[in-house]
Amino acid sequence: MSDSCVPQSDSMQSSRVAWEGCSVLLDINDGDRLVFSRLTSGATLKIGNKNCSLKPLIGCPYGSLFQIESAGDRTHLARVTPSAEENNNVQEKGECEVVDESRDNRALVDDNKAQTLTGEDIDEMRKQGAKGDEIIEALIANSTTYGKKTQFSQEKYRLKKQKKYAPKVLMRRPFTRSICEAYFKKYAARIGFLRVDTLSLLLSMANVGASSDVLVVDMVGGLLTGAVAERLGGTGFVCNTYIGSAPYSMEIVRIFNFNDEICKRIVRTHLDDLCSAQPVTSEQIDKHESENHMELHDETSAMNVEEMSVSADCEVADADTETAPTIKINKSPKAGEKPSPEAFQLWKEKGFSCLIIAAPDLDPWSTVKRLLPLLSYSAPFAIYHQHLQPLATCMHNLQVEKLAIGLQLSEPWLREYQVLPSRSHPFMQMNAFGGYVLCGTRIHTAAANGGTPKHEKGAL
Image (cartoon, rainbow, N blue to C red; front, side):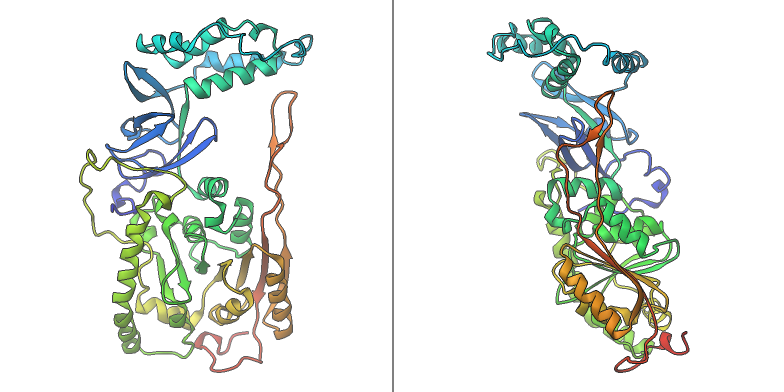
């Protein structure tokens, strides 16, 4: 598998231009279908019953628009640029829509007799090299009812034919918002039904900023880890901790196209390693690290093999195994390595800057009770859960134990609007639930049981 990290020399260019081996989000027909793909010279994208090579996308800036074009029996992606004339036509249509209200669709009958152009005629046009736009214009010209429809109906008709005969592909840069929206739309369960506004609230309530050392419990596929690392921008550390014998999946992190500098600041370790509150020597840390190195390496290798499967992403356009070139594996830093002994010692002395938990399968109270001693005093924390009752119980226990102040349990709510001339209204179908977020600030308590970590001594 090619490394998910971007070469250091290309780090400045990665945010603007797609290169060979990077991950991209392909938006087909304005959100009708979202596909994550890794660009290689042999990668293909299937649209309808046609396979199109993704090679033309390499070297193009993010935001480029492509259209399916046919050349005989072969189809390919061609980059298109909206002209100023088309933009003016769209603006003129928006200005005249209010005036055109005399027509209606009451007299129209859908009996499949309005279109005189047959399927054989369309196939013949394709063989002669007709483009998708030419086919659409021919369909409009041969429709006996198109001129009788309202302006809104004509736009719907044109858009429907465009999606069928001239589908467009928008190459988007995969970042926190686009990745979260794509997963939430296609496979919401894989990210714990974490909506983009809820994820934004988690990062804000936890006060994630530059040079922060963030402790995360991420059971949402690595989305939370990637979002925190993206906000840190190569400063501080993201420590992904886990409970149990195997680490949680971080498959989504590789989609972010992080460079080497950011990847080496994404570390992963077992919770027991962090919860050994008593100060330890460097020899003990080195010994414990060597004992767990082989186990973690095997688990990471198994995960990397699983991540390359087609089922790992929302939809992944993989390269043909017969034509794909051999991918050279480099030894650049990978996200999820073991923290250094110096980092262990620093966190045990000073604590983490903040804590974020997104673990729908774990009990919030038992988890946060073990993790709070790892934070520095006055450090914020934020917990996401799909259900209200576990967070309400956690909030009550934090108040009783006097472990935190400023506790707030909120339910994010998001409403999307369609904004069009004379048609601005809330979307007819939207998600009405975004989970719950519990946030607060850790304080000192004299009721601590057991030993006191070094960073707790003398703290206010």
